[in-house]
Each structure stands twice: as C-alpha cells, then as structure tokens.
Image (cartoon, rainbow, N blue to C red):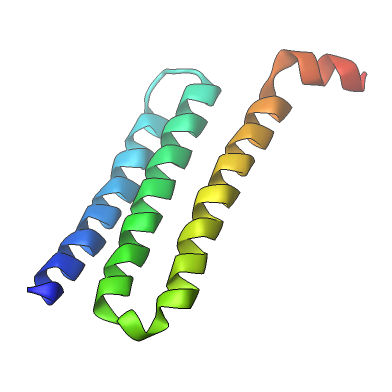
Length: 94
C-alpha cells in the first residue's frame, strides 16, 4: 500500500512539472509564465520528495530538509525574478 502511495506522489509530481511548462507556450505575460512555472515546479518537487519519504522513511531528516528548502528557495526566487522583471526596477538602475 505504501509503495502505491509513494509512486502516486511521484507520478503527481511529474505531472505538475509538465503542467507547469504548458503556460510557457501561451501568449500571456512573462510574469504569469514565471509564476505558473515556479508554483507547479515547487508543488511537483515537494510531491516527489514526499513520495521518496514514503519509500525510504529512514532518511526523513534529509527529506524534510529538502521539502523545507524547496518551499523557501522557490518562493524567494519567484519574488526576486518578479522584482527584476518589473519596469520600476529597470528604471532605478539607469
């Protein structure tokens, strides 16, 4: 039962990864594309690591650290990218 749940979480994570790349093909703004990609990437990566946590519970400290690091890193990176691509930040640099 744990194996099925683990593989389901890993499969859902891979689906999130591919689902996040679909908005890159659209005609929306760059910020919308970056937001969609970063959210889907974060959820997919956390789902995959959670699936690994179910698969190898003996490594829980490292996998919990990976989940926390992914959530913080991807959130901060999204804010930095959004700030760098905003028109106000490019005017301040000139």
